Image (cartoon, rainbow, N blue to C red; front, side):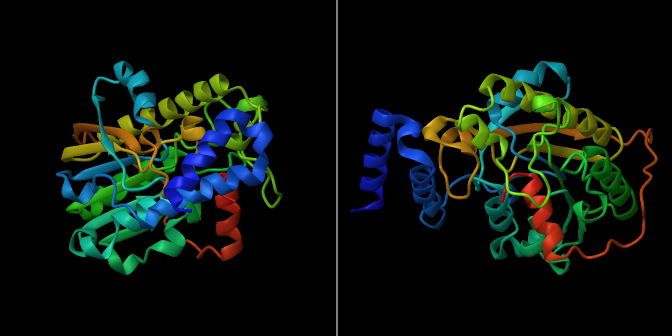
Length: 307
């Protein structure tokens, strides 16, 4: 049976029986089949084919989520694009690829995403600052946006790179700004658990409550993006995302490499500019970070719900 036929039959079965009838193993088989499309299709708009000086990446931000807060920020005008990845791992690998080696070499990449650890090398970039190694907030289970903003402002003023990418972790859960169940929606470090998408799918979390928390997490990071835009000089700024999140579309939840669902791949594409007013003097630990070992990287990924 071909992959296409298998997916069609699986989808029909889901419609008739629902996930309660299929169970976790069938869900993972269905998801796994979609993930295999990563190797089949060249999908999405590559960011290096576009004009920008500063690229702001809001991890896991859906296009329609961004439109809900558009009127709250006078610099935010939301259009859309389609991402090359269904999850951060795929987006990072396809964005900073050999085909764009020259562009990458002129880029300063300031990131809070731990997937940089095994996908990237500092030698490829004008600067690679893996801020998640130094400033991870273990209580929140993520890296807060202010630490990334301060590092980006510092590097931009000191180095004036030709291009800079700053990769914030919000609105990706944990939902720091509006935690579900009275606390951060994250796995317990070192212990197996369910991420928020599993809990929604299994009826443990109300999807509307999760969407509200997701939206608050976007406001949380956009407030810091505003601080960034007031403290760097960049005539061409693009604010976008590496991927969105699925809330049941195609019977899937969260985000996964290879999945081509339009609501997962459609991301905001917002053009603006930035002018350094000098209103912020960044403060941070300037010591070199201790290289994260495999265990600490895995812990961070688990807190983000990837493991």
